[in-house]
Image (cartoon, rainbow, N blue to C red):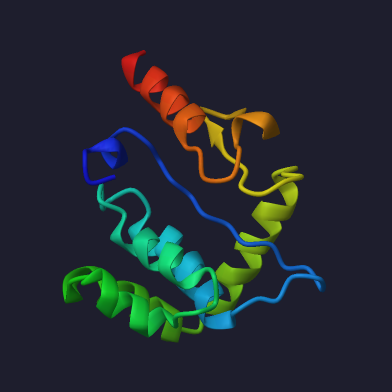
Amino acid sequence: LKKGLGSIMALEVCFYAAPEIESDPVLDKWVACGNSVTGTSDSLYEWYHVVACATEGLNSVDTCIKDVGMPPDKREPILDCMASLDAAQLVEDMHKRCDESGAEFFPWAAVDSKDLAEDEMNSDDIGPLLTAVCGKAAD
């Protein structure tokens, strides 16, 4: 993302709601509000760096905001959204979108509405995703 990839892709993050998955309601709100409020307007996706930091459950969203060094002008709109009455609906909508995506494995990604196969999304290997995104950018 620091090399400009964010300017050619539209990242959307969604988290499932399932009884077998332990979720963090604060992180769910951060993700839903980050998608809604910030979306693709921040090509560095600093809100997503916070998500990546907090996903393992070892760090809180607040800690990750500080660790990432997210500036106030980017974090405050998301925090305001999280405190709003709309946040619960945004989280519910995110869970529904994720359920309706048809994703059957994690991580799951689609580029230009084309799902990447599970064998292309091998753990931390982002090569296939980068190839698909860069291929789309070349179109």
